[in-house]
Every structure is written in structure tokens, then in C-alpha cells.
Image 1 (spheres, helix red, strand yellow):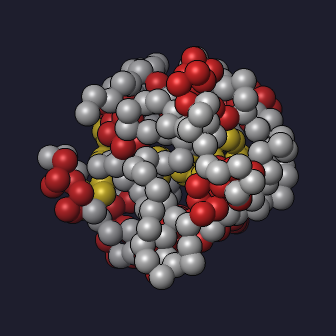
Image 2 (cartoon, one colour):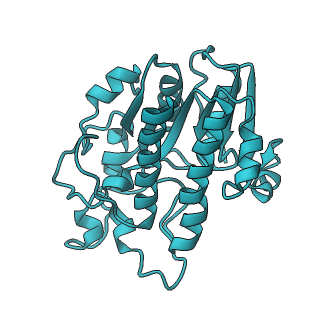
Length: 286
């Protein structure tokens, strides 16, 4: 698999940056660009995931509070791509996305970490109709346990900024895939290219005084459901790619008409569950 990247600007105002989820698709896209932008980049993921990809990183289970505290020592900023990235039964989501993100913020508070870029998800608002256009100011409507766990992470980001001054940019990432193409008609609204992911994360780290901010993480797709301009302007993020060029190839790839998956912004996540098995969608954050 070849991952297309954009090196982006070469300077960020941090000496040590931590990337969690470094063995995942998005982590591997971000690694070369971030490595060029900071003096020291620390990569972390579960030990087996790092080994499987041949990545020289620090093994850490986010559910291990002591391990996360050790991981955050001396870290100025975090790009948090770790955790479960699909809809599944509650228990693994509890460990990675709820207990894990709490451990991360507590460790950041103790370590004096200045900023966290948190990989949230479009599934925080996945129960809105596809006919609706929404902004970060609209009420959350998660489409499952996964979306609800990301909403919890956003709430922790708000808390830890208001109480402890840790800045957080919550990126509600859309459809980002290993092959860097929108997989279906829904993704014409939600696609995020790999190069735009790099641009967005760099902007989220570089923007001054962001405080607490929620932004939708997509490319410049004309069919998007999101009001993006205000948050993007605050970050200085200008996407260069668009799903529009793939429209003729994926227009026919859609769930059955009238199904929740066809009607709601969360797409196929609305068709997963009840959770008597661990059925999951295709790889990649979508």
C-alpha cells in the first residue's frame, strides 16, 4: 500500500510531539510530515500493531494509566489518532476511547502538555439527515457507541481547557481511507484526502491560541453537509483536494434507498448492531 503524503510547512512551535495510533492508516500518513516539522516525534501504538508494521515506537495501551503517564513525560503536544475507529460492542470502546482518552488528558495535565489535536469523528453527528447542513455549534447526534465515545472525548477536551488550560482541536474526521479514494456515494460529502489530512493536522498544531475548537475534517467537497468556513478560517486550513473528481465512479455505490444508512449522515454505521457480534465496516476512518 502506498500512502500519498504532503510534507507541508517545516516548523511547528513544539520540541517534542507525540503521535498516538502511529500504526494505523492515518498515523502512517502523518508520520513523515510530522517528523519533518518537529525536533522530536514520539510514535506510539499497541505493541503488536507497531511490530506488525515494523514501526520503531513506544508500545502503550491507552487503558493503562501508568503507561500513558510515562508516555506523556516531556511531551509538548499530542496528535491523538489512537483508539477504536469503528462501531463495535461497548467494552473495547470503553477501554480505548473512554478510559483511554481520560488517561491521556490526565497525563497531559500532569506533564504540562500544551495542546492536543484529538481525532474525533463525523459520527458524533451521524444521526442528522443527509438533507441537513450542520455546523460544530449544532447539537451532537451520535450514531452509535463509537460516535458517543468521540463526543465524550470532545467533552473532556472542553473540560481540560476550561479547568487546566490545555488547548484542544477536535477534528471530526470524515472518510479517510488507505487507498485515498472515496469508497461510496456518501463519501462524496465526507471524504478527507491524505494530503488534506496532513494540512489539517499541521494547521491544528500551528494555529495560535485556539483554546477549544471543533472542526469538521474533510476536503473541499462541494456535496458536504457541514458548515466549515469559520473553524477552518480560525485554523488557517485550506483544503486542496475534493471528492468531486470521483463522483462518476461512486455515485452508484449506496445503501438501499430508504434505509437509515441511506438517509443519515452516518451511513453504514447506522446498520451496525445490536452488538451480539463484532461486525465492522471496511478499514479506515469513515
